[in-house]
Image (cartoon, rainbow, N blue to C red; front, side, top):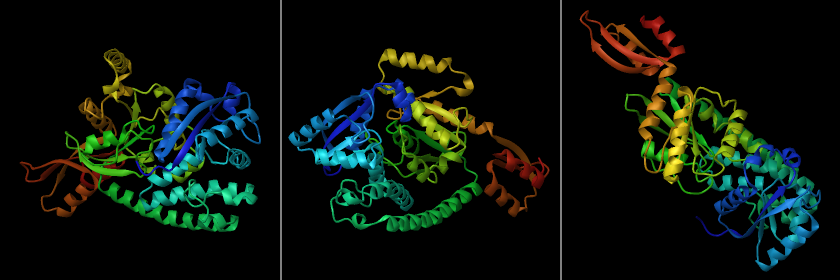
Length: 438
């Protein structure tokens, strides 16, 4: 954790009526309690080093256009911000520019909504050039509407990446035209970065190692599992969005398969649409993966709701829940009691074999062998094994095989020719047969 960013009050507005929640895109969260949403919001606030001095639910019949919450609650929270010396109020909901301006005036504190909070976290976590550009692009698009709608209130706007920064930042003096010019420049730079990433992906395709991508709700244990499988040192902590930029490592599996394992940013409910679009290039590792490991925290009370949230984001990326590449990894079984563990393992066994999840503890390594076996089995479904015969003097042909397939074995046959056993995707297998026979 870094230096404390300020004292914060976290508010979880909860609309009583399901129809009103549906209008906010929250129809599915009837399975997730408002207390769980509040707990997550507090975790998000702490992820940017805010000291949460008060957190609570605010039940609403409807949304007030001017202040989101009613006048009584506005006055009550104003008293809290003063008595607790809070400088930030986090509203775990979408807040319009007008509502933000009115609440900041009433509470004499900075107001951050859920979108702004997630953008702030992403801005702090981004380490690569692409990650930083994507966050700035999303942030400027978000901030642009606030500058336009709140032109007379620029002294209270935050510029650049930081919602928590004070006056004097360069973005404070920026107008719509300057912001749009910066957005256009970032888009140009992102295009260059995407081309570079495409070259890297193309080069990996020429080295025929399948990609296995880890996805899941934030804090589900993806990075811990990544570390366990690769013996790497990726940051893994009990913190929302502990890692952001994708990390890739090549590892060898017991049956001889070499794979590229990819750790990605965690998903979250109500992920800002602009971030889904901004991070699409980063998530292309998932889109093009041969196997997708959906890591779930089975010790979490809202595991089913988190499943829905991840499936929704994957669906926006064109990956449906029925996608054959998906393997559910039921993580954190070490946190379950004896009865809970037995119930979960029984549930695993009752699933159809082709969709059966794998129960693991990324922390202890329990179940890792089963997971690796499941990955190898899934990879084997889409790859063909061929027996080829080459002239021993055909060095160029053998080199081509190493570049375009997975060479499993090679030996000199009794006929004086080189017998080579290879494995390749179906499309490449056709090329191999055409080139070498087999």
